[in-house]
Length: 396
Image (cartoon, helix red, strand yellow):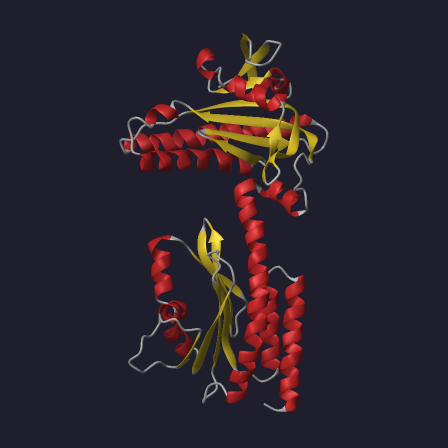
């Protein structure tokens, strides 16, 4: 490698690191890298960056540049199909043989293992393929990144190009490590706390007692007679049914702009913040979410009954009022949630569902925001609440 070529690669390394400090996605960095390597005369056919993921919906993903096409993201799911795809990849081969790099001349004609990817590359005229693995430090499932390059020059990579890729790889791996860490912090925090809440935590709202009083519509849902199922069915079946029921409720809440704050045994707490000072919109969205959850639960139960499984009904209570939205707990173990008398009252109203014979109830404050949707079914004392509460049922 000449001094000029070394200087070009040094400049490219500086660019990678600079972009890695300002970008949270690998797509723009990979696109810029490919553009610069093409300008330096690299006969690239395909370049990819593949990383594992800590995500309930995917085991990993790859950002791929293919000659004459745009960048794309390939997602590898969990389950047997995802595992089979992984086991037929060069990354799996390298990991299984404790290797950090591999090189294959294409088309593959040797007795060594081949991969479906190589047939695809050979069809595009690729002659040489290199993959490098860069391990990440730490004890998470994010073990590292796989970086691959394929070219279509008759003799494959030159020695100078291989040396340059060797020099680029650590910088690109470092950038991927930082982006992966940010992805975990952002995506997984949202999985466990909700999008709105995770955003506040990432902005630094992490002190115990930190938060604010907000007005919100409150949705409190509880699965009926779920505890008794534990005596008749295996725990694995119970967990599956619980997850299915939660999915029906949570999807409905999120589709209508709410946020689930907490799962409490077989109950769900969600809020719909009042963002414009007027509670009518938040209440309308909460009611729509409750109705959608009821419909989804009915559909789910029909399927369960057809399979010989028990139907699991849900009761939902709606309320609106002021809550404290912020951090509560111990100094080193916090929960970002909503607490206050309005939350307690919603939970108490839900307990009246069997008494009044209706599964969708609302407080007087909530019903006043959508008066044509509810009718009063009685006035009841609520445990821990000084004044009896007027309770309303949805006009189904």
